Length: 270
Image (tube, rainbow, N blue to C red; front, side):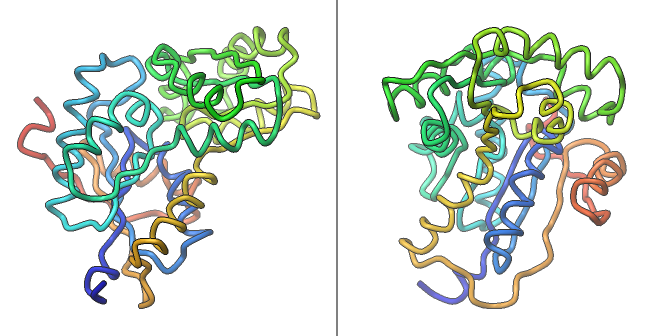
């Protein structure tokens, strides 16, 4: 593999700031890699969209990332991973990785009574249930669709008492089932960890699929001989709506305020 190909960026996309949890893991596990991050902020949340809409959005974004010469695409969005990964993988000649299978494989290593909190679209797809039971048919799985979490996080209402009440409501069925493991079925949800830990028994294991995904990325880069050995380029941030709002929100999660560019893809705002 040529040095030029190795130096190319990894494309990462999400509906908003959720994918920054994947970006942080990339920084931690693969600090030598350069990243192009796309947040489809004009159309969030994805979790209440139809499958047809998600497929269209993902198509447009991956097409754009490929045109920008990324060497690999990470779907830092569970809804996209659940509904569009297989279709989009067959369409583009580039490695495209999602969160569900890496997250499911880690979950079955952690426990036997597994709860998954996810967007309504991810929960309805049963993608986590299928992947978890495929990894270990002896475990039990319960899923809860959480429509309000992403909007609350994107509006920076993490410390609002209402967010705590909503979390309590969503977790109640899982607490009743005495889960021993909780999977973040949405990349936004690790931001809620202090609230979720306060509501669940201390013995419950938390699974962040972002950590598992980046381990898979490291392995894939090695297998395909695509690792970058040169100094990485600064991360490039691009969004489809307000760059200022995204930059302000990102500050607390990244520890720095990114320079964010707004773009309009040919069909991105139709």
